Image (cartoon, rainbow, N blue to C red; front, side):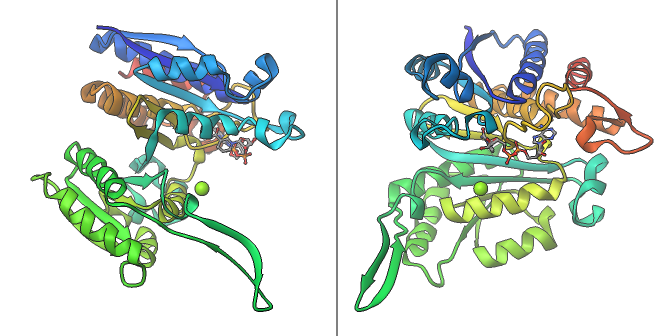
Length: 355
Ligand code: NAI
Ligand code: MG
């Protein structure tokens, strides 16, 4: 049976890095008989130029029908002056909403060969393998807001954190499911000593995790988690947390590896999953053939794992990436004297050859 992958290159380096990821996926398909069929669609600035909208209906319709979506990045200075509701970045929010994507997954892996690029000591980060699962459609970002209002002569504003049992249940279940493919340990991060919403989160997490016999759930306060990520990141397997805490912790964790160009992500929900590197369209290096395609390639591996249940093929891509890095090949962002500098395309070809 064939699997439809909608590819949305987007803007800037999006074109180059998605081409690299598709080349690697084709190779994995050839080796593992996955039946992949690719279809390219537009979103972001590219779509704005062509159709006058950052997220055309035809792109949304194709995404809904797909088995999975691979996205490059959207945005760039060319569209800085457009009105807010037409901004290229609206495409991402629109796709999240259209596809009901409630979970954001960010793996942070630091292969030994890259540990020296980290702001932390190599021995602290070498061989880190963490998965952060962030709730994406609830919490304080979506609760009631009150813009600055004067009450009794004092100006005030507020934002309300709301979580429901079904929202917490489904994100924790997803984290437990992901943990079954890993080391089976989930840390749920909250602030239950202070927040009522966190106390509901904690007790719901306990219930949701009961169904996963091979998974051990523990709890950590968010302030402690922020410290532990810098002190002993290797102790983590899966972290599951709210929208706000996840936003902050995932950015903290993303720098452990040294280059933003290496980091993949997945957004999962009721419909097809959306996979994209965490970086943006990098207009400063677009069109030069020097962008690091590894974030996009590892996003493609996540696509195989989470949307196509092709774990073996996913691992074969991840191993190939590790091998090429261990052999000393680097794109410009990670180049050091003594290593071999390669282009975006060459990096993809080397990874293909190692699958
Ligand atoms: P950025 O992530 O595009 O770039 C930040 C820095 O990292 C730049 O120096 C860039 O050259 C470098 N970089 C990023 N990816 C790289 C890669 N694969 N290989 C080598 N170097 C890489 O963030 P910036 O500059 O703040 O945003 C540029 C545009 O991208 C903006 O329009 C922004 O709104 C948009 N953006 C889009 C995102 C998305 O599509 N999900 C996410 C973040 C930003
Ligand atoms: Mg953020």
